[in-house]
Amino acid sequence: MIREAREDEFDAVMRVVEGALLEVDPETVRGAIAAGDALVAVNRSHVRGALVLDGARIEAIAVVRTHRGRGIGSALVGRAAERGPLSADFRPAIRPFYESLGFEIEREDGREKRYRGRLSGPR
Figure 1: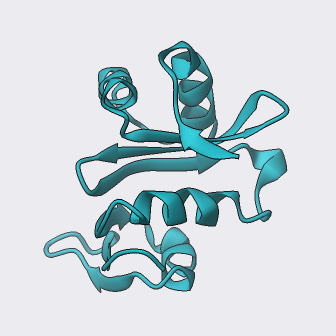
Figure 2: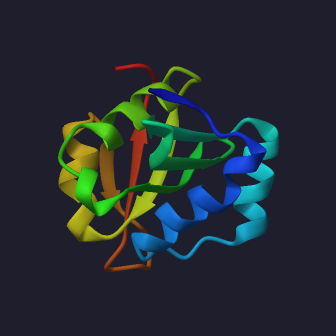
């Protein structure tokens, strides 16, 4: 089930994000949760994936390692896209994920090893 994260799930969201080795400021995550801009994938009352938005920009998306490859990340992005256009900045290794979701991708100016993607809206 994909839904907005609750404030009492802050620690669980941080564990998922940090488990994916993503560096996100905890206050950014806390603020996104409070604003309704953090989504979670929950299975058996456990957070298995999380997506943190900063406006229309995906600040972080992560899925627990043992649950990857099951469409959780795609479902999180799909739910976020229901709100409108999205953007994301990411490493080359993540490019296939964003391409599979229909993001238009370009290399970031001045940052050889980073990409920026844009999704027009719901897929």
